[in-house]
Length: 448
View (cartoon, rainbow, N blue to C red):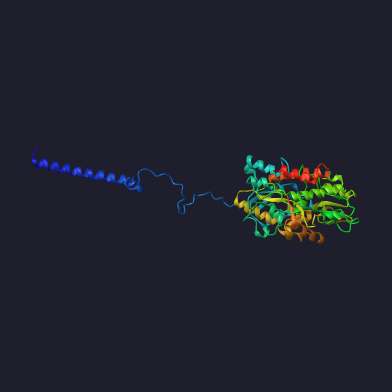
């Protein structure tokens, strides 16, 4: 091979080596760009540990499914038969018209009422709790429950907060006991729409003035009846009213028993005096509720008796020589207790919650609520509705003095223990089994 050829081969080999080196450099450069060398801590080849510290920037929200607004919503309402729209009574016929008017005025809304038993294993609360576990898709949008049974629905997360759903106009026009009974941990979870309260009736042929204080009960010869037999082992409202009128507490802010021995002992001393001076007959221990008291009053041997507002309004057209009055209390202050039923929104759908709130507001407008109240003889939960009921002015005036001072029965689990302990004490004193102080001590010790 000539020298010239050797030179050309050497030059070609040199060019190939240079090209190979450039190619290697290029590939190596790409690799570094993808995997930083450890020389720069911020570009370590070892992946850093994942930090749980919130990055101080606004992250892009994860996309969430948006529920489309339904073209039409038919709400499902569960409740007892006494609140069902229909034609079985004047009150149900009124509700039928109101539900129909709601659908007419809200072309995209309607309501379907499903009747449930008021209490028991097949009652509305138990049925709702069972369905929430077994068949949550069958749950209604709204339920009507006894205000005394609200706590389990709130505890199980079935009741929806009403803040932002119910109009302020309605919230501000509720009697205090309505707001308090439906509020849990500062949140309004239910709205009571009707109530019955406890007060006196007395025989005007025997008494010119009804007893206003405890002392008045012993000033004249009267026969005074009140329910003392207890309700399924729980103390009657009559006892609680006297205790709470003295400033006594039942539970503290955390729902634990908070009875006050002084107030408790004073009420038990009253019961003892009623027995000793035979102002109240032994039969009061057989009277379990206000309907039993009404029956005793109608038999003609009772001068003064406790009665429910519903019974008074229902029987008013046939009452003779009978008038109404507040319950006597130690100091003569106005005190009573409310019983009633409440609306609870259950649905999780924002659109259905909004529709449910509109239905509640519709049924609770002053005119609609008053119309139903007049037909059913249950008291409206809104002060503004009272004047629309058409009831006698003197009774409306009386209700306006009673309802703002009404107490309510707590629905906390601890109240069950309290009510049972108090019933034992009341029964022991009325049968002379224990002195008031002994019975009071027994209650306090049993709740520790």
